[in-house]
Length: 182
Length: 286
Image (tube, rainbow over all chains, first blue to last red; front, side, top):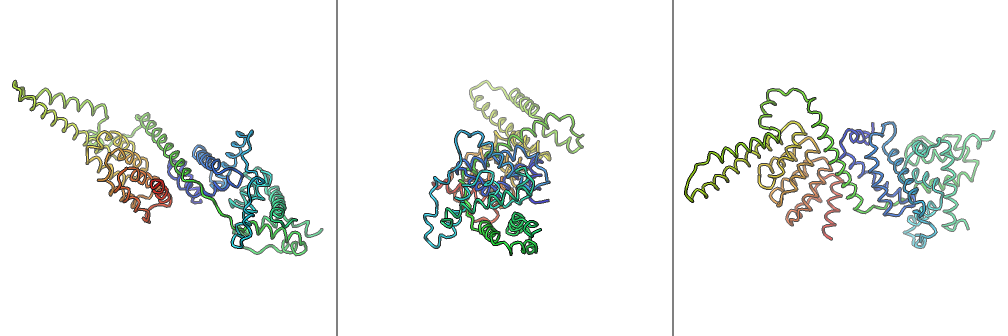
């Protein structure tokens, strides 16, 4: 049994204060997950709060079969989907074309790493939501293929194809943004 | 059948991702290596994948408001839970086990609030009835002294009952004791000391948090500040540490504030409590 599964079991038994340990461990990466999924900083904070409120409310539905992390991101993904449904009339996504790219600052050599990262982030924002979501969960949240495929409701082989497609599209956008594709 | 039809690029990517995430330690399987050797496009795609998965990824930090909102939500949830537990136990009174002799004797000193009130009223009435009757004006002063003495007795009896309840082995009774002693918290050092002892040694987080909430009603917490800071060194629960810090920092006493901010270097503080202390001291500086 993992440390986090044990903590969740204690929360289920009424030791609600243990949720503070899980919050401190995950809230920053969860916040960045929402940011990378195209949400504003303020909305991302609201979504983190909402996710932890749901974790508390649905604590009895957690089973030790999966990891706490994958269960938490499943809730986070659904919370974001609910949010989008609620705000269907107004797009909450940051349009990558409207964002000034950090590539403008890329001439300085010591900024090379940050420039590459900015390009990756910008290229990521150009992907369709479904592909972006899969890639963010795999690359930045470090979830494995099995966990994500269960979360998004497909089998592992289908998910492998989806990731390949996402990476191929990401590469095309990256090359255009970096000037390599011209 | 060609090797490409046996080994798919998505399989190679999946393997690569696992390797980058330290989930496989073995070298790449031979069929995959052979497939890559004969396919330059695949090698380029895989190089991009590696580049993407291993590039530096800076994380942004949310505002301190997020933590504050979370802990407020958690506190509210705990209060609701405590009330539910309390109500459930009150409703299930008939299922309680038979008390032993010691518990029976103890319970004489820990009567239910209704009986306690009745007992106090009888004491007060008897005192009033038995007072010496003087027919001169000096009697007024004498009466007020007697009333004052009687009030002190009542207070000390209430304190005794509250202290007994706070020492009860049942967490529910200790919670009742905390609620019962609330009216005397600012007047009775003995209750303050008992609550500090509860805070430092009780097994139940709920009881500790309730004790803290009661102690927070003291108008001047300077005399007990050192005892509260000592709790930070022994307490392992981040939530209790955070509540103690909040109480000390928001006391409005400059000396207490300085003593508390000195705890920034305290290695006994949990990571969560250290972060909150840092954030609260920054907010107070602004």
